[in-house]
Length: 319
Image (cartoon, rainbow, N blue to C red; front, side):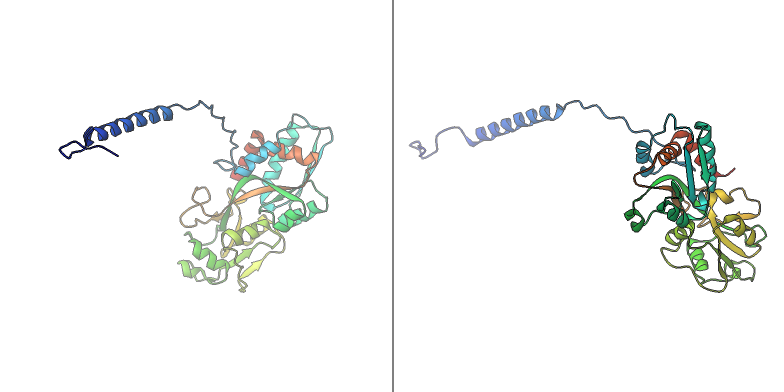
């Protein structure tokens, strides 16, 4: 029990003294904490992994960067190594560019290429007829469940094309393009063009470009079934371009049409395929069966190397 003086007042230091002591303790605590925060162990930063230039500019996808560590460039391959490819028609130029570079790097090897569509390439891969399938769409869950894996090797852009004789000289908006391929708009006069039916040339369902178009343009919707829409029997770009004439419209990988003299690429929302803001972009892949065989490993290692990526870039940008 505290004692009081005869005057009835509490003995000991006045309250202001306790406040001052408390403030001093707080200042000392803050000073020690600041010193503690200032001390940190020095941890060296890890170097960033090298970036792989993506075909057509920019950086390759993260998947391609990771895959480059799984499939490094090989110093040599056994004499007589044979690589067989089939798949997307959109990757014909890429296949040929990589074939030329691969044979130059490994002169005693062989590379066989075909282009019967992404779906057909995947089926050939599943039955073991080829080493790699060139595909312009991601693998489905069912395909992955059957042991297939895909390596992204480049980015591509889907171009919307008309014939040079087509009097329509403007661009289209994304919504207008959707309406055309759904069969909701069927006359060029709707956009200020001639009073003439729009003849839509669609790629067959085995085409990876067809599936990608449905996804990134139609939002996973369906193509129209109006009489002005024709679905081609074979997935081949050159015949489709020849069929455009003065009233047709179609789509193809940009590298296949960039320097064509018989067609014109339409801007979409004011952007041509060269623009970074162009809306219709997609990754391109090589698919293989797990575990990959020696030929697949060798070709993927070259495709993901600096020389391989340079070849892909030249193929996508056009001759």
